Length: 88
Image 1 (cartoon, rainbow, N blue to C red):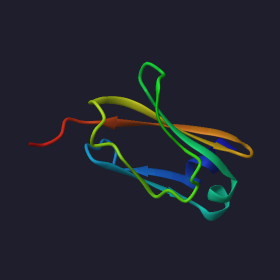
Image 2 (image 1 turned 90 degrees about the vertical axis):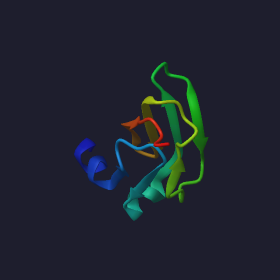
Image 3 (image 1 turned 120 degrees about the horizontal axis):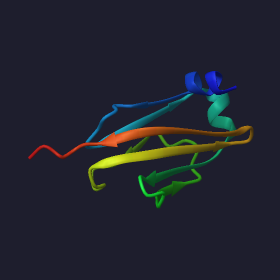
Image 4 (image 1 turned 90 degrees about the horizontal axis):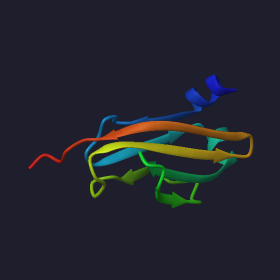
């Protein structure tokens, strides 16, 4: 099931300093119940129940590693994303 989820859920660009796009297959999107973002310490910094979300603005987040967790009716998938310094 993990391999199927890997193909059903894409997040890019990675690393990013602005927005991260979230692309899901239609079947996967229909099973989504929640999308959360956690910082490296495990603190939740974003949460939505909107399964139609297409991107998340990370431009105000501190530089570092974050984890995007997508809960579905059949389990969850977590992907890491690196937020880089903003270009001045």
